[in-house]
Image 1 (cartoon, each protein chain N blue to C red):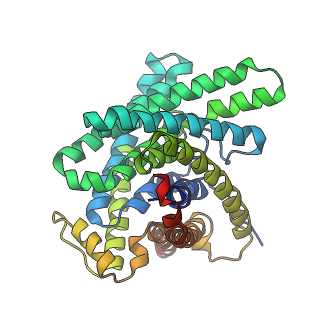
Image 2: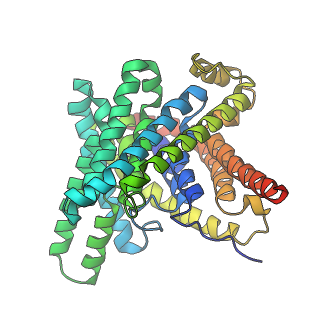
Image 3: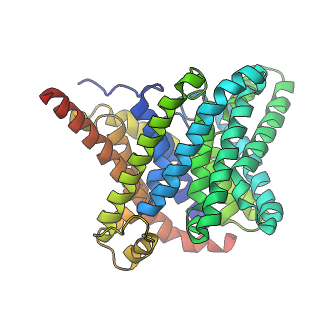
Length: 197
Length: 202
């Protein structure tokens, strides 16, 4: 699968839709997607750091040793370490923005959205630079998808739906239809970017 | 017009839906749902068992990390078991297995499992995990029937049918990731409808 495929199908199709359906997974304690410049920057930095580290570890350590099954455990260590380091770095800076950045980084550490991006990047991109590109665009794609889906979610809450379909069922069904549209886009655009692998 | 209430983090249906999301996408057939549903049920149970110990034995700043590591270890253990028993199945579901484990990690980190957890609640959590596993089976079975117009017996390799569905699909949308969300959404709506109607009659 191409890097565009990662952004459109794996990142959007898995994590953004997961967030759309659940509302809790993008930040480990929050109920909203990363918001504002500080939240978005924290998310991008975390996804980039965790995705790249995870991808390199998968490529140079876990796969050659046949230890891919330890993937979740290794990711938990990698993301915690990178999140701690980034939060520590941000806390050294002064000002309100730096405070918000440090708080956002602390909340994001074990986010499954970041893990989805890291998994997609390490599983689908082979070279070091492609993993870096995939991690960055995966995180960017997630932020864009979250913004789009939040708008649709707010619009859905005003619709006169049957009682049984209100809330989660309507979110999941509309998410499924959106994923279908993005799957079509991925099939169309993906081959053009396949060489990034 | 009254907007739909925002889902509560304590709502068990809502929490089940969170857990079901990666399983719903990855489970194209019954066997897939056994593996993925089992992974989440096992990891969630590990989180429920680990949380009280983490609260008692580990200092507060490290409690979240300790719970995450226990859940990650449980997810890795399940993945290792699947790889040993069915390597082909593991190869196909590795991504989803890892993501399901990460889902549990994020949930346990969110404090969903640890805030009110006590060892006395463990039997209740076991029942919840079993019910969750059955829900995952229902989703996998529904997708297999809808995508191939047939269902393989439980212990046969129904993953073969998932492959067949791509070549000779019945309703191909249900073999795609988006089909998982549609089945999950319709399933929750159906369960709500039945619960209300059965509740009224009783």
